[in-house]
Length: 252
Figure 1 (tube, rainbow, N blue to C red):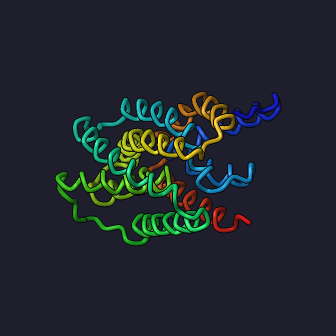
Figure 2 (cartoon, rainbow, N blue to C red):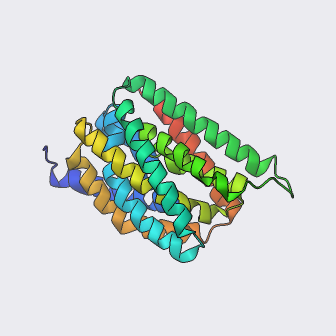
């Protein structure tokens, strides 16, 4: 395994702290922002950046979920069922994703972010309705499948797609949806980590200090998320998706 200098280690540690703060705030473990940063700063291929980001995502997500669960009503039984479905789906999807062309995977990832961001933004700002259709909870397992597929393809995709759908289709609050989505990321992330590790698409010497930094700061982000107005939190969520999607598209 390669090693970092003391300065490089400190930089990665500080970067991990920033990513942990953002991850706790948005309920996505920081991986969404970490992937394009790893591509820019370390010139990593898309699949390699996604695998390395998983090292940071998993501990950040676990700590974030514990704190979100303390502050929100989250159904443990339904969440565990979704986790099981997402885990199996993510494992097989990740095996397929590692064989894809990295440029094509980056394009798919960007388009995926844009679709989620603009649809969520439109529902939040322009198409709000006093009365809306709320799906019965029997449809929740479908989100487990969708979460697993997107986690396997994009490592962080599960939380991204689950949060807005829980808010728009199942009447969850923003923070309640973020907490539930975090639980879905854990099994899918672990399954994806195994697949990326077996494929050799992980830089452990970079991922470990990122994870250590995130562990320090993730609680700050969770606290901030519960202090912000829900509308502002939704706008932040959408804005980050758009910015990251643009960064990926414009990577040389």
